[in-house]
Length: 118
Length: 110
Image (cartoon, rainbow over all chains, first blue to last red; front, top):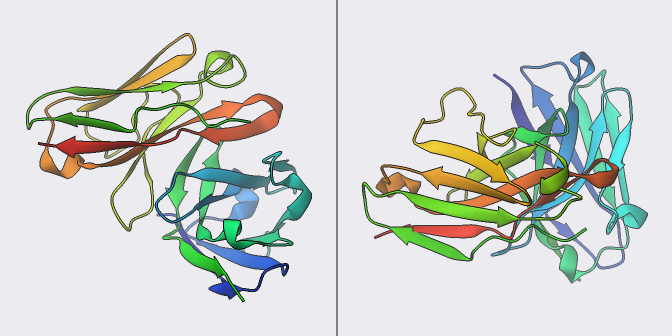
């Protein structure tokens, strides 16, 4: 059973960089699949941020691409998200998920709330 | 890249059927047979209910079914139960290898 767990600071200051890591267990990232980040502002809908393949191939949401970096560490079965120059609008629950063939997100982490505030 | 359009709310009585629509464009729903549906209970992570338009993951009740026609996908929940009360989101693969979600629909069981 694949399990995903997000980790990172729950509070980030405006203009700084938000950094999150997703630990994957029960499955080796190097075996395949894309892996992605999705966020959900409080009380609002889902927004896809980015996805990465085990080889390092990346897909980005065009509206966030200039501020986002996604990376993967297959030796640790981890993938990470960096979002730069954050504002209050980036306050959200951030989920990591397995991106099944770029077609659907079939396994999700529990999510982590990140608040952008001074 | 705009969000797919869903009705804000849908309601039904126990035992009834409801259908949630999800409308996109030729760049997403209309261009690919990769529509997915997610159920999200309050305070929980989304759960995949349908993928590839109409396929159900293992363990998902056959009361949930999906379909697509043109630029609009639909999720039907038959035999509505109290636990079906949740938010539902559609998703689609989109052009330039991106992904897009719907605006979300709150389902209320009367």
